[in-house]
Image (cartoon, rainbow, N blue to C red; front, side, top):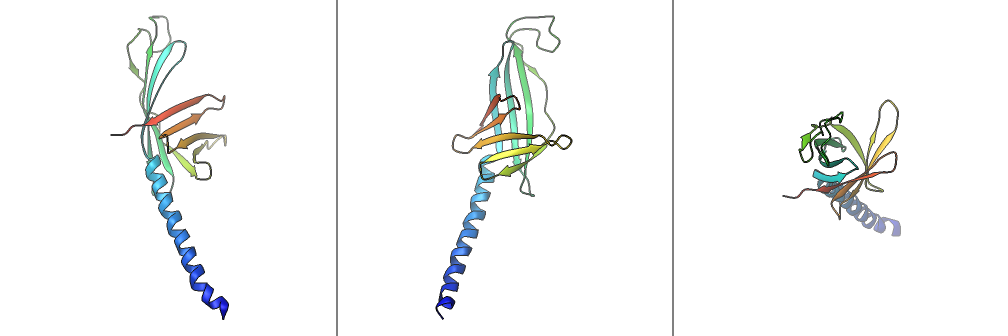
Length: 148
């Protein structure tokens, strides 16, 4: 008789946990989705990139770098790319849309390369509103969310 009285209580607790888990997952998708900007430089160039992250109906995310800008630090007419004149910004265009899977345990977006099986990892920090792309060589590229 005592177990019968506990069953409704356990069902209520279980239902509450399910509802809160689903709503926090939806909130996480909203927090991650949006446009992100990044700036950087190397020995020769300055960079400005914009990335867009969209939630899909299948529970995954579409990631696309929608603008890749760079400008030379010094004039160099011999350079093999567009960056020959200092201060002149060149747009290299958008990348293809890639599909990422959210790993909620460590808040990362992961893109698996179909041919090689290599995984590219994007660390998401919803508090700082950043996405950090970690390259295979260990370099980090930090994108900050653009708020309107």
